[in-house]
Image (cartoon, rainbow, N blue to C red; front, side, top):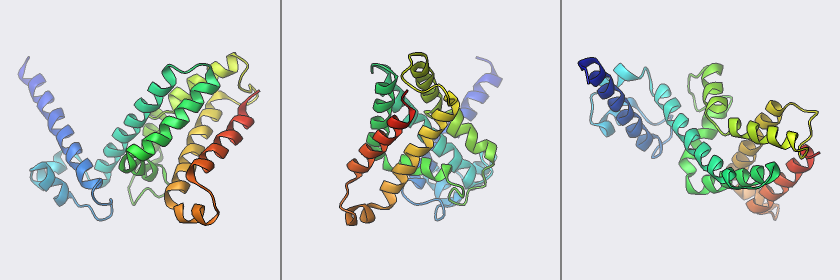
Length: 210
């Protein structure tokens, strides 16, 4: 390995170590209260070194959310891999997303924050958000499953597969956000989160099946 290659590998390793430190900080406090000083202390680096790799804590939060979305995608893709037809795959992906919400609540909150119209005060562009949500999220897998369902005449063909996949993703995230934030309201309405999710799936599948 040449000197240039070794330096690049060390740079990428240091970058990943900073992101891991940022994960620990952001998952123990919210974005607004976290500081680059906190992250530098967690990474055991100077704050100046952090700025050699990232312009701001918002840039770091973007990378933390990117990793969270990738992790969710691995869970949903694995759930769909051994399912039956397209409708069954979509159901398994939905269940895997709910399980992820319970097993990785901080990761899910990062995903929801980055998807918001005002994602926690971050300075992300539309291109940034679309890059991680639609480029690295479960939407790609959803599109393939929907296209499979259309070919098998299980899913209606009068709506583009891309639009169906994006809508399924955004609806699922919206329901998760509602359940996460409005637990008291759900209880006052004599409902349970499980009932809300089940009704959501019924309405969605009734709407997309052919």
